[in-house]
Length: 127
Image (cartoon, rainbow, N blue to C red; front, side, top):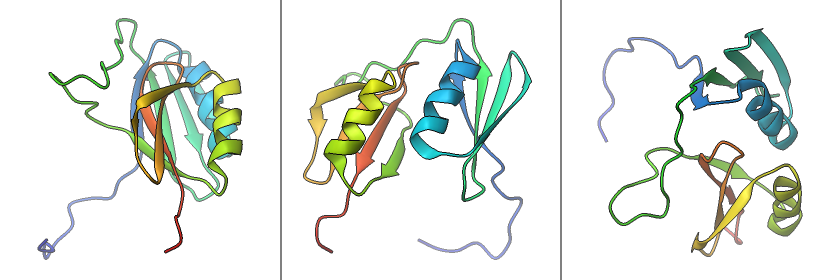
């Protein structure tokens, strides 16, 4: 992949639509750690320990993607690196995630967050 000789800007946040911004921010704060700040009821930001930002904006008509669905795609998902996938799975399920067992590989498992966005728990397998 070619590198462009210029940069227009830097990524500030990854933003997820949800019916419940504060609830989804709390879910990801429990998964990733970090600090949650709310601008108001419609916009909440999680700044994780590495300084990356996930923002959650209210979308009253949000509908999660159908996944897996041979007619569509998940469009976007987060990969979360973990040391012990079984322990991490237990924790994310207790926080309200659901597993998508038909979508998994040798080094990842797929889940839906409480708003239905897909995310993966990934782990290293020896390399």
